[in-house]
Amino acid sequence: MAKSILILITALVITSTAGAQPFGYTPLQIQSLFSEDFRNEQYEQALIYGRWLVEAHPREMEEYPGNYPAERNFRRMIDIYEYMSTQQEDPTLREAYLDSSLQMFDRVFALFTEDEIDVYRWHFNRGRFYQSNSDHIRNAFQMALKDYEKMFHLDPKRATESGGGYYVQLIVQNYARQNDRDNAFSVMNLAEPFADENTLQFFAQTRNDLITDPGERIELLTEDLENDPGNVELMQELYELYLAVGARDNARKMAERMYEVEPSVTNITRLADKAENNGEYREAIRYLTEVHAIQQSTAKARTSLRIADNYLSLRDLQEARRFARRAASEDPNWGEPQITIAQIYGEAISRCAGSDMTRIDKAVYWLVLDYLDRARQRNSNVNAAVNRLYRTYEPVTPTAEEKFYQNWNTGDRIRIDGTLRECYSWIAEETTVR
Image (tube, rainbow, N blue to C red; front, side, top):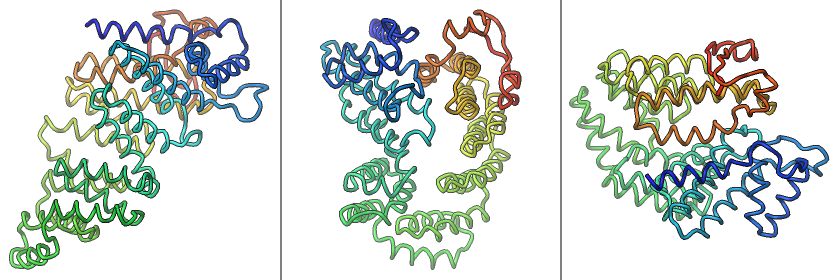
């Protein structure tokens, strides 16, 4: 409890200067002072100005020479908080500063579009951050792996070549340790065209460790299957062996054959997984819809939410919300669907506002917070995810000054629809001014 309270107090201190410009300086003066203090390693002083810059997050700045470094300010704040963490003897304070760095990463992903930042590089940087501070962050290695996997799927070539194959080998090694052959083979197959000799040798050894003599095994099982064409167990083993040797077309055909012989939840889900991994989201939705029709009620909600995630990948926000709502109704005690709806609305704000975020757009973040609250009320197991997202979205809700200009008072009900912007018309929900 004491640790949680101390982290909360630290977070409040960190955001306490967000509303007003420090000492009445102009934005350009704040940027100049921040840059100078950072270069001179006067980090405590730099924090005063940096906090305002990342909270206010001006996209442009008049009279600034050249391109305004909005993204660079976040990188510097991450470095400052990380440095400050090394100066703390109290492990709780150290963790609090590291958590502040992670908040900066979260805000970058929330505030910047793919056109504004190198998303791949930001996932790489956060992965390295987790690894560098693994002694002080719970589950840091697994969190780093998630970022490395995201960067791999964003650009398999770049990720495979990075670090002489170190990062892709790390991903594959993790799957191999879990004996997750499907994912290990999938990553290796995507990476092989770009891998150097050392990485190719690592892949070969990993395959050998996971499956012994796959070529001979394939030949034997193929003959067995000819004699017993309806044997799904033989098909399953052949499917895994095809993955092992990189015969992706044969693996897919075998997966389809298993589906035709036995359209079970497992066999249909396998095709849905493959479609998702290949970015074939509509195909994945088709298979998941089939799965949903034959599942027991307790599992339906998970499938509905996967369908919602696929629609979100297609940027079809209305359909994504429809299926997230269905998941919520199918399992009223599950908080994840509410989190997904919050993220859908967060995406809607990014798409509607773009780089022109106004106080009207910021009001929609109150609705995002409403859904995060609902998630927490339904299932306390989502508290960690809700808290992290809260730290991302709450700082960008309207300030007291913005509420004043809109004549919004705490407790007022406002409607999120086309009266704000036409692009919000489909949302058609009410939220409360906070």
